[in-house]
Image (cartoon, rainbow, N blue to C red; front, side, top):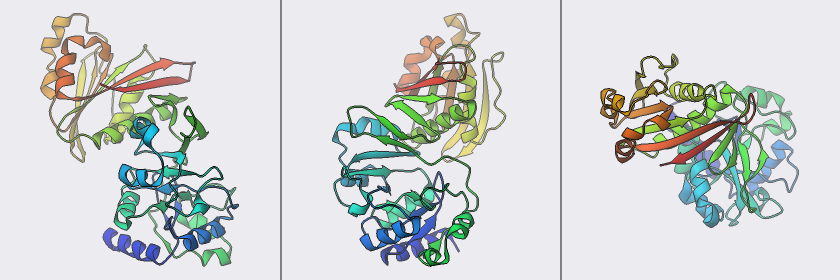
Length: 347
């Protein structure tokens, strides 16, 4: 069955109050119309979810999100976290079934970059439930068969359709961020852990790579006519090359090596509108005159992603780069031997 046919079939099921098992950017989920109380009750029955325990919903973008929850005080941080593997908790506007809200009348909302779910929510035109396909208290599932096999026969009959994308990567469920108080609160840690609206924490190389992948995915969605430049700053060994490798792996480049002795390497890319990845290391640049021979400004063209380690040394070129590019400044600091704080700022 083609993807468009599958999407239309799911839409028809959702309109009829059906319940679907579907893939997401994290785990397989249980999806129904979040405004249909009969469908929501069926979902709660399948999950054995205690009444009063909230369930999050998918939005297809900021416009829908603003109809579901109060966003006035938090627009800046929402733009930094979304789209991405985050669930944000905000005061509900009571558009969805009250069974999905918390006792405090808050609602968890997701805005994912997973194309299939994004398209489904957009085509359906209403919020859909965003809860993992598992019985409450049991682990989430990365394959639909495991979930279906886990269900008693009576509950299995409540599932109207399964969208099978095979085995998903073992990403953790989304990070849950409560924005209802005076400061950001983490309720559940996923793969990406924000400690403020500008800052993430990483405890291992793989987490640093996932932060890099999240950022490049987020910002390549927002630019169409400018190159994207990541300027990395941090002490030796803090993980700048690991971050660069995370960018490269997202773009399909797996053999990233540190270009310390040649200043930069360029890698051809075929990822959406991105055609080239340039990875530079300015550690050995000592004189400002040396920049005139590098030619980095020649790469400031549409469809290029540039990552510059020791980017704080590129002040002679900075104004030109800022004028022609979307610049993301990334500062990496040691918190302990394995723990890093990664601060992100748009310039």
